[in-house]
Length: 222
Image (cartoon, rainbow, N blue to C red; front, side, top):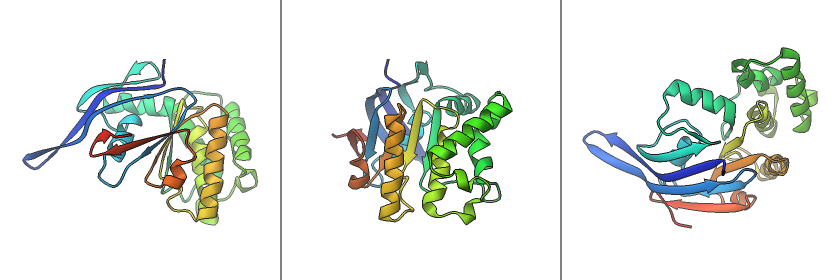
């Protein structure tokens, strides 16, 4: 079974007295181990689609099956559990806790899952080595470069071994050379078997993916 199955996904927002249909019937399959880019201009619906794929929101109608489970109509609390168990997020703005160390930031998603502390900390240390930050383990985000902060965010995203890594404009705050380093790291994650969905407006960044999907005016056009 594909990891993500979206069937006729529609999303309508109420703005005053007007209903605005942002997604107009999205059908999408993402297989396990894929690296997919979703591209679209501002207002195309890609952010709304990302929020639904990431279980940050639910569709107005349609079905979304993630890792074999129907998640279209879950409550906020149920969605929170699904996110923590199945999805790792990497955002443009990093969203690191500035007063926590690199190690503490990476460990944050593990606080909601019952696992042995020594196992969790060993895993986090190995992941920080994988992303090239083992020597920065006691640093705090303000002491790091933008690229290093994004590496911390990637380590945090994979510490719970999620089924899906969802990245939203992960290089938007970075210079071109650092952006290449981050995309190479994400490609390495995919080569290790992780499923990646990349949300971007940048064709150069999208070119790292194995499949590119274009969304326009709430529908997939290519």
